[in-house]
Length: 106
Image 1: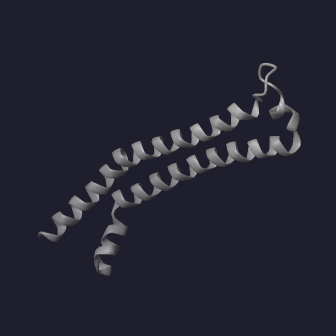
Image 2: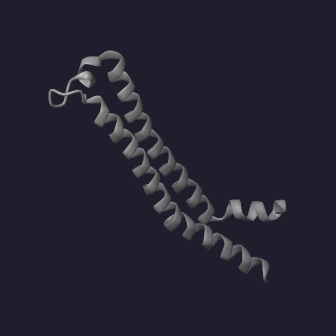
């Protein structure tokens, strides 16, 4: 790809919108995941009794389902990102490609 094509793409409003939306959404999901994970670690560090408490008097503690929930939520967040990337972000990318192709065919 030559530098003039790159500059054309960078100057397109659709490209700027794509970069802004993708970046914002990615950071939002990253922050959600980091807050959950580090909250879990902080609870382990400062309140072991909370996660070490038995659920029903047996050997399963509160920490096990909480840990599993964090793993499940990470998969759900990945699915949410993938769905949006395959929808809205791909649509914007295709608009950019179509616009560049139209300009180059002139």
